[in-house]
Length: 113
Image 1 (cartoon, rainbow, N blue to C red):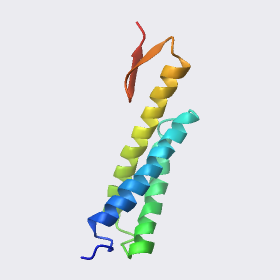
Image 2 (spheres, helix red, strand yellow):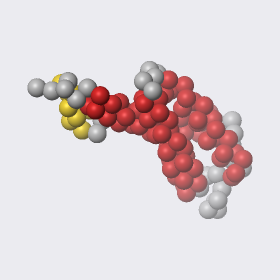
Image 3 (cartoon, rainbow, N blue to C red):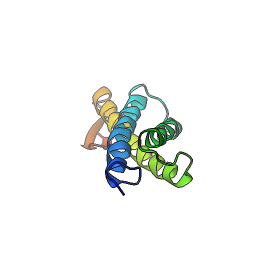
Image 4 (cartoon, rainbow, N blue to C red):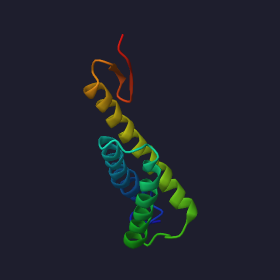
């Protein structure tokens, strides 16, 4: 195992978690910003996971058609996108409807008392 092969943990962390996760986070925020429905995150992350797997294949001679690696990548990207979606939706709700809601955490809000 070398440092720049597809089975290297560094390649996985940088390509899937940092680059792919960052893109997924921003995609989730973008979907929430334009008030798109929640379920669209799952569709767009399927496309992004295919692109990330292609980068693994093209740059590091990884396995392109491995269902296991695709599902792991998909799961990581969905988590990052849902985090971005929820963070943006919370910001929208507490800024646009500040007389109705107050922020309770970066991902939640509640009715104003």
